[in-house]
Image (cartoon, rainbow, N blue to C red; front, top):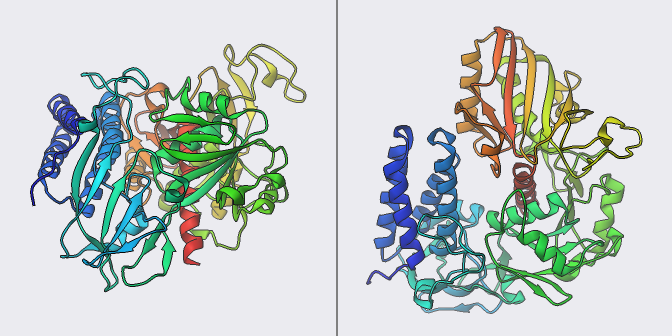
Length: 548
């Protein structure tokens, strides 16, 4: 089989990766060079093994968030990875409802998105059944200039030849004895029926749904929109509907497209009349109901709802979504009575009989993984936390009335404002051993995004500061990889804008008084990192529910 040509945009990313390898700091140069070499080899293959593609993107993601190479390198690798995911043939097994059996024992399917579903990827193995061919069209990402920076939004598009390429895919099979072969055509825009993802065995008419979560978002404010953006990047979560009674689709499209903190949306956004939005070719219904019980989630197939209004934060109030056809609700805020789950900490205690859950707060998501490691390794006796927190939408642009919290009514951009927080106490709910052993406060500061936790605690098992940070670093590379990160770079808050980790330990910022009394410092993007955990939690509970 002849090697098929890749799109020009992929070749440009190869050049960028080669340049990054040459200019990377010595401690990161080898890993980046390995990525460049791997990409070059993949582009030469007539058949691209799915497992090998997955391994490449895992390596790239690890390098992109390893801050020891410097923030500039991290951002460059992240951008390269994003563009490659849109253009390389690394596709999720997605079949439409009109699948047809083929003589080779496979099926042909219309695919509506990029990326390999994690659960499926872990349970497939290579079969010697030959390759199948699919026609691939890119999703028209924003063009970059020769330096790799963002060009004009919706600017000069690639030519048809550079946006389309016929690429051979490897035939893949599940661990079952019946081989499963997919020929996939990826379209920039897909019809609604193509968005229903199914998995079919070639010798059976029965289909079972792929673990892709159809999600609705109630409340299109800061968190609602950032959750949406994270869903687009995640791949396993598909937002099919949004509800917000205070805006209409055109304004929703504008707010999703442009963001003062996180930049311009990397994709396409269109308005479909009064029906909703079309994001990267996918239809997103838009509703304007004030009462959650009246939102017709069932019409758009939204099974899981992100409750991000900040209003319906109790089990009773959030349960109203179930009346519209939803199956589960995840509250993107602390809840007085709904069970709270923090990814990497207590998510494994979730059971499928719980209809409404909370993703806790951004600060709890930062503190809990940190506290978990310290308690498991050194036994925490007690601790005090202070979060130095960026201002939020609840604060004032100029001095104004603020009811009970007088200090909270002062200008956010001019003041450091002491405030209360229940984040530390909430850790006791997700780590029962620490219940009553932690409390804390907040200092609101004049920054738009990224916050930092200061945890001062006493530990039972004495250890040097170096031993404590070594344990945290080990956890960040092991069981808490992707949740907890570790750095000894001289970073400041803006360097972590857009970082997807829940907690980034700053090894050089902490101190200890003795072997039993230590202060730890850990950063977090209180918008992006938290929203990524909402998406991760949705994907996780959907997997549990599917296996129940």
